Length: 178
Image (cartoon, rainbow, N blue to C red):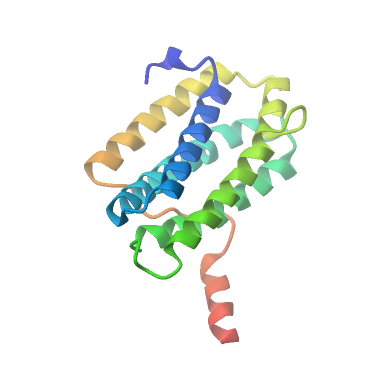
């Protein structure tokens, strides 16, 4: 994953998008529970790494240079996806709703990608119009991604942490409603 592999931060993020969409497509076409489990694990790791590099590096660099409302929405979309990621990491293909959770996660991610990659007004278009150094961001993101990939291989990644959506409160409200 040499730094010159991607011309800038946006190319890196788009490559991540393509990779995770390809994994979702592979999941959709497999019937093997073992393969489904492996693909779900890979999808979850890819999404955790991607959301971390966006949240720690890319989005903060764009604050004030892009529409902050779009960045806020992106963060909430990340948090919503993290709920499903964490559920999937504790589940197995034979568990109820496993395939449905993957399907919903895929649709949420597709929506998020459309928002980021929207021509002229999406997050990436706004980043290109800004004064943000997208090559410097690429280098920072590649370094962080490398460390996260090494962690995933050695000790595993921790559960995905929501940053703005209060997961505990929503769980409490759902339990109280039952």
